[in-house]
Image 1: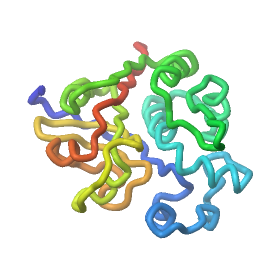
Image 2 (image 1 turned 135 degrees about the vertical axis):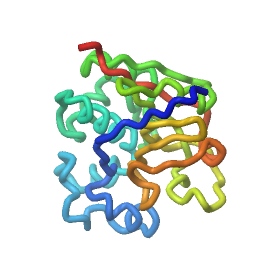
Image 3 (image 1 turned 90 degrees about the vertical axis):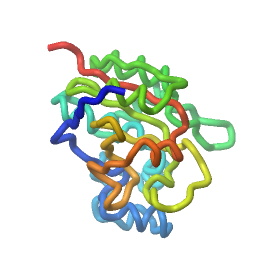
Length: 210
């Protein structure tokens, strides 16, 4: 692991729901996400569709933060979802559910549409992915959603995506689209804690050379 500290400043934070301050109520207290007055902020207009997809858009929310950091134009999150579905980034199941963000279709789509360079890490140590973070490269990694309360015991690894935007020799800075304060935006955790939640896979996003 490189000893150099890299911490990207000004990375926009977005909740995968309408308002960051509503995350605890929605994710932990089962409050209807449409009670949030800002539920249409990400471009959704149909309540049922928003209820279904809001809890599943952690990956696109991370992507939106990276695109806005780098000044790359994009449609609303709801419109990006429509395009992502057309390219098998998410796959609907016969039981009415949906498979989570699929890495390789996501990489191909993000490269074609936004001009990013996306590397898929199907199996990697967290330190290995974090070592690649620079001013031009961010990482999206799979962790348990339980990471919103990292001081509590967790039961799972994986199932949720967060954006890594900084690292030092001991840990990483990150945005969690379903996080709660103080582990929501620009949060820091050491590798020893992160590894309890980390599923061993992720992606790196690199801005195209200008």
